[in-house]
Amino acid sequence: MMPRQRLSVVMIAKNAAPLLDECLASVAWADEIIVLDAGSRDDTPARARALGARVWQSDDWPGYGPQRQRAQQYASGEMILMIDCDERVTPALRQAIEQVLDAPPTDRVYSIARRNLFLGRFMRHSGWYPDRVTRLYPRRYRYSDHLVHESLETGDAEVVPLRGDLLHLTCRDFADFQRKQLAYAEAWAQERHQRGKRTGLLAIFGHALGAFVKTLVLRGGVLDGAQGWLLAVVNAQYTFNKYAALWALHQAAKGDK
Image (cartoon, rainbow, N blue to C red; front, side):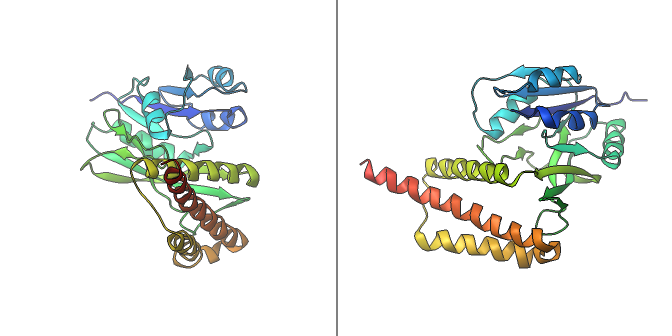
């Protein structure tokens, strides 16, 4: 009988102490838990250690993709489960993951359905469910260098959907969620600007309107009640911020010449 594959749960964190207890409890069955802290001002590192994690520190912030890859280099397991501090592994998902670990090693990677919380409701539509993300994979796979919306570079590997959900406490505090959305928009614009991308005034409003219609109508946000309507507005606002920031960067660059 082949030995069970070892699982490393890998996380990046910053100022996440209030979230750690439930998160780490949901993966306490893993062979090891790796936390890479990015200069927390609270007791995130100490709390993670107290809960059984192995903790490393980084002083700079290279972006989400590079930071996840940094964290992964500390892992020793054959399989990686990459999660965030505001996510929790459900019992059904744990069972599905353990079945993968008990099977012979393959080149496959595994997608997980996330149930995203928005203003007190776990969304079932609006493009927020099943919201599959590739998070369980052999350690040899690497992350892209994208500053935001990073992805795992898996080439032609087969992507297998797992049963069970990953609970994602996306929006617990609306003001904090908005600040994060603005930071993501700014990072997105910086990345596109560095690649020579541009946008125009009409495109800014067109993309924003398209995001609203896509969320509310095409993705069934209207079925998520009041939260669906609000999320449609938030997605439109986020999209507007992305393209407006990209436009502003190009205008600033022209003024410097």
